[in-house]
Image (cartoon, rainbow, N blue to C red; front, top):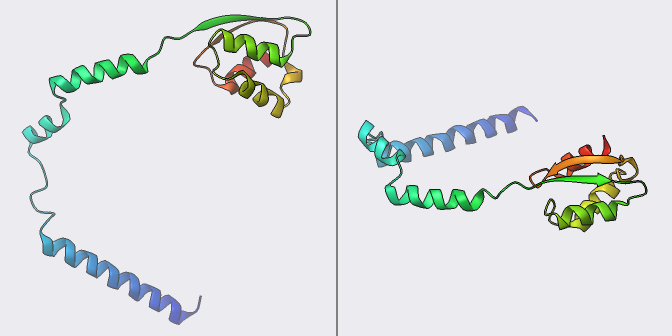
Length: 132
């Protein structure tokens, strides 16, 4: 960048900042915007109806955790494992989990044994559990 362009850019930044500052201070919006302690408490504390609503939403958002012990046997395929996990409500989509395992070549690394899994585990966590 040559000297003239750099000076032009700097002048543009200074000019724009001056315009913004002029509008900010000329409108008086910045004055009186600091709330008192009582106003801040009223703003932060939820109303009783808000508390009831938040309690209902929390109960809806907090689904129960499902724990399942999967028994992986010899020659068990990824499809069978994904179907089993889907049937037990550990995963939502068996095909998606199977694709995840196949795309990362983890299907070949599944170990034989019993594994405890939950419905709040990610595909990565499930894969780590089944392959280690």
